[in-house]
Length: 139
Figure 1 (cartoon, rainbow, N blue to C red):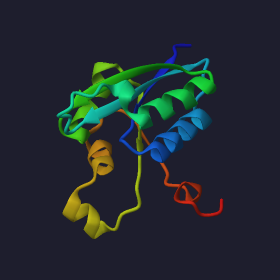
Figure 2 (figure 1 turned 120 degrees about the vertical axis):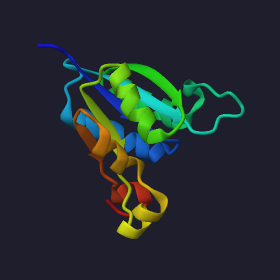
Figure 3 (figure 1 turned 90 degrees about the vertical axis):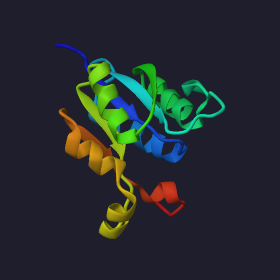
Figure 4 (figure 1 turned 120 degrees about the horizontal axis):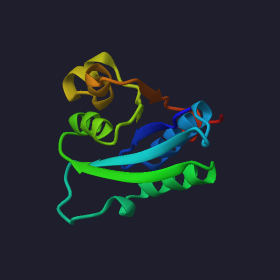
């Protein structure tokens, strides 16, 4: 059986990246899947590299601790377009994004990267849920 490739698109929030790693680890066997941790730089005037981003490091550490093979992938530009294009570029079978709770009005006013990825991707999209323990609430 061929190994699956999961593109995990992380932003700069470490808790979200950990939630995505937990979600992927519960759905995939590390012997049957590899992970590509992707970060899109929408603004990078300092010229940072992907491995300098804390959320990327946390995700990579979590995946490696669970036994996954991990590679890093970076882009710059519109996040939703970059995620979909990156998935095609690395030939990902699945995309994992983080879903924040937002009102319909908030999505309409500010846009939603998650919504755009779900609507434009030509492959399955997993949305890692927001969890109470990440907000400091009791689990």
